[in-house]
Length: 223
Image (cartoon, rainbow, N blue to C red):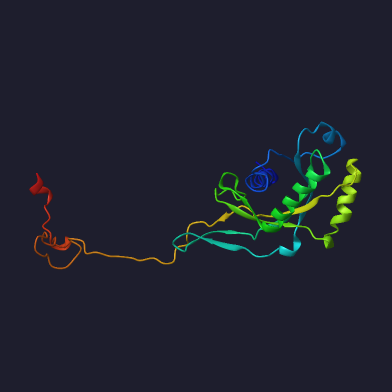
């Protein structure tokens, strides 16, 4: 599953557990063009992903040491790079009043919610642990109004109110594992070998005679 699908699934789950819990409202990530609007049936919250850009302001440099429980460095990893996924959140219902009511509920949820949980079954780092992603509404200084206006125009839809939601995700490079620890020294040990010299101790065989003192047999004796 790609990182974008993980964020989509987490957004859907958080909305259905939160502001949409008591309502039978569909959550869609389809492109809200004229054809989609004509096919839509029933109330719907549409989250249209229209932009993916890197958050250069949060970039870092240098590697980070990864240590195990014993404090041993087991690898190195580069700092994460942060990317911002921006969604145009719009509400589609039978009446404008219903749309505004639900849009206000979503606005309150976005203001109260500063983090989006990506749960263990679909964690971004693949470790099976929950990840916390930054979630916020884009401000007017981010040219939100101009972006929304251009989007509706390009989609062939009359301008309608929408929220501009940004989710910031970290992406890390694979861990570079450390090889075996280098040899820091060497220790030599020696032990006394029986018959290697010196007096024979208890339980040791007597020292053999030097070769010069051994008796030699001549040819006649061997015959």
